[in-house]
Image (cartoon, rainbow, N blue to C red; front, top):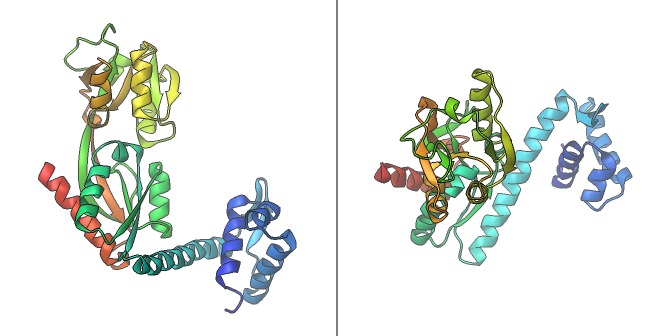
Length: 300
């Protein structure tokens, strides 16, 4: 269809994401009438509306949802093609975009990717931090090649291969009443002020779900975005924190904090590397996935 050029697709995606024609136009440095005209031309060509006005602004119709998903895939493919072709001029052969959870980034993933680049210096790898739901959506929509996240996420329909793992523990000030325990159950921590970490992430949702199952709510005194910041807050005596041992051991030891393992079965976590499927992977992305598997297997 002649109306479905990359510019129109980009404008349609902007309209859906901004939920407002004027904001989409401003984002793309155009006047609103130009955006409306292009979308109207596509609607006329297919004989079906793509957008309707809802309570939160404009929203895609069923046909619009189909176009939105396909448009994102097409635009990402074009961007990746341009990046890879540009990279050849600079001596780079292939590019891989990776989305990773905060836990994966705080642990061995950066070192594993650095080791890969040490052996494949003609490949460009970009690494972005996202919460698990955004990682899954990004892989499904084709906006990234690989995702690294906790296997508790809903990855149905995606290729998922085992990666590394970690264990949750309770990080405490050494003077805390629980600091000398050899291990703790999550239930034992709930009566004490706590530090919440990465609100909205998988670990945050897990702890809230387990607390709800016990009929209580976590007593968060403060919520923090990163593990190292959480350790500083714990060191100040503002509460305990439940954190992955492998990601926080260095910070905790440097601050003189106690680390008590959680005894609950769900405290042991496994990570996976996800992709849309073998057929969708470029040679560089496939090499990186296999490299991460080998590194994880060697560590185990």
